[in-house]
Each structure stands twice: as structure tokens, then as C-alpha cells.
Length: 307
Picture 1 (cartoon, helix red, strand yellow):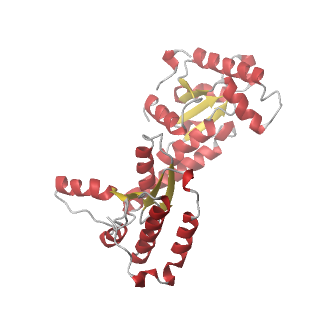
Picture 2: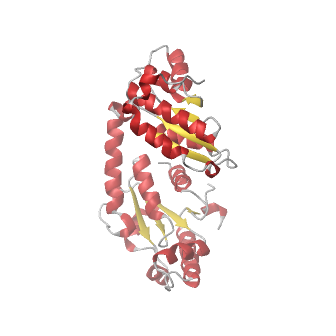
Picture 3: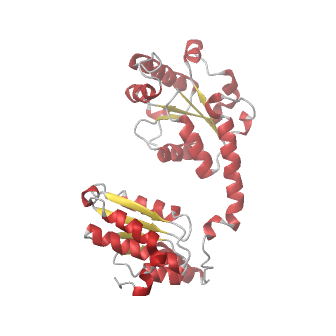
């Protein structure tokens, strides 16, 4: 693959009255956790939030990825938005620590200080993401933050939410070349052989970034004509190519259509070679999806096309 076309691109026991039947669900869950063999993981990680927990989980996973020799059992505790739920979360974390024989790690995005104070009593390594960033920002901006639960998913996010929904609908309607209508509205059109990662990349771009992404397959008929599909010729500036190693492509295709010519290694080698040759001829920027995550591919597309 020529470089010019391949971007490399502490612990307080709960009072007796907090161990009442109201905590039955939490106790049952903790008992189930305690029954699990400890050899399955090295440390348990909790993501605790008054919302979905996605922010805590995303941030936490980014950090944990730096410790690839450690096995983590990850547990999300979302919608911890009352004191009762805070005590239930505390109970689960404490029980898991006793079961594991080592304190858990907790990533928290709890906004309510009372609930946060309850969960913080756990014998765990407690990483408070809001305290780490909101408090320094308050000092820098000389403004007290709202401390509202779920703030990141309301008000200012409405326009971006609507943009993402529209982009998802667009990408679904323009998946795998099923519609030529409104291709002019696409911000990017992904091209490449079947099963090289075009659809998941398109949907990721739409869902995460609100990008109207279409995708179009390059097929043997295109290779015979040695030309791009007619529908794409007007939009070459929006094209971004994906390729994949023939071995990996054959593996993926055999999961879908085993022992077919479509999935044969010989055919995969032919299609990949032809597609890459076409992208070179047409001056289409492209990269291999073989060893890259969807996130890495999408980020490269955004960077290269300046979206």
C-alpha cells in the first residue's frame, strides 16, 4: 500500500438499619458475585453514575487500556440517583472487595454530593471524575457549576442529538449502495470490497459524530470495467476507501457464506488487489481496516477529510 494513499493515519460498615429487606436486590446480586471464581479476573472495576454511566465507562476504559497485563471485571452501576441507590452501590462494592480479597476500583461521575459521599465510604480506590475536573474549572472560571444530574444529555446537547439522529437515518438509507438519492448530502462516502468494515464505520460516524456517511461496495463488475460505479463519479472528493488483508476478509466472509467462491481466499485476493488498484488510479485516499478499530478508522476519516 503506497504511503501517499494510506494515512497512518476508606471503609465504614453499613448501619444495621441499612441492611433491611430494601437492599434485597443488591444483596442477591452481591451474593451472586461472591459465588464467581476469583481467578477469572485480577481486579473488579465499577463505573458509578447518576446517569447512564457511559462517560465514566469510556474514560475508565481509556485508562485501563494502558494496563494490558491486568484482567479487569467491569461492572456498570447506572442511575444511582437516590441515597437508597447510593447505599446499594456501596454494599455491592464492599461485598465484591471481600469476595476478591482486594479492593475494587471505582470510577464515579456522581454529581450529588450526598450520594457521592455515601459511595465514597467504600473500601475502594475511588476516582471521582467530576471532582478531578469540575472543581479546578470552577476556580479557573470563577463560576460555581450547576451540579445538575444528567446535564451532559440535556439542553445544549439537543441540537447535536437531532443532528446525530438525522445522520443515523441517512447512513441507514445509504448503506451498501442501496440508494443513490441525495448522495450530494453525504459528508463522506466509504468505498471498498464487501465486508471490509464500511457499514460499522458509517454508523459509528453517524452515531458518535453526527456525520452523514454513505457507503458503497466495489464489486467484480466494477473491476471488469476498471471504473468506479457511475453514481460515485460526481462525488470523488467525498470518497474514502477501506481495504483489508485477503486472509482476514476470507475469514470474515466464511462466517457469512462458508465454502463459497465469494469467501474463497483466491477470490478475496483478487477483489482486494483490484479494489486497491482502482483506488490508486482514481486518487482515492484509503487505509486498511485489518488491524484498526472502528474508532481509529473513523478518526482517520474525520482527519483526512477535515470533517
